[in-house]
Image 1 (spheres, helix red, strand yellow):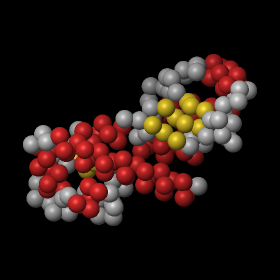
Image 2 (tube, rainbow, N blue to C red):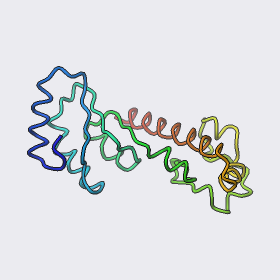
Image 3 (cartoon, rainbow, N blue to C red):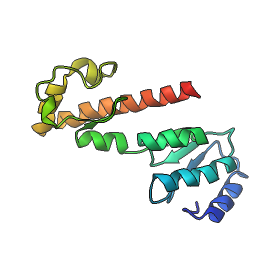
Length: 162
């Protein structure tokens, strides 16, 4: 795809957009950090056909999504929400909850008060804290369920705001 070389990226998208694809995936080397990623997308997205779906490969952290959607990226995929869940971090609209922290050991509240996911509707922070500290495999599943639900809600909010 051209990596971070703008001339190669331009050549690649000019050729690919001449072909009868249903949509486009942007991948490969996307920069060393979020700033380079966003700068690459600022250059690239005006060249990508806007009337077709545009997918960003391997990027789905909340800050990158916030920067990429206004530039024309439609969909994302990444292990980010599941990976951070496996390490005890829960994504919320009020910031990340690190469920391993002792302050959650006796907290009867859900991860996120307004969240309607299965995990938030059925389990307290205290119980999830216990599962994580006990290295119970169920913890990774329950935290992942929440994080995936949260990311879907984030994208739904983003789509409504457009």
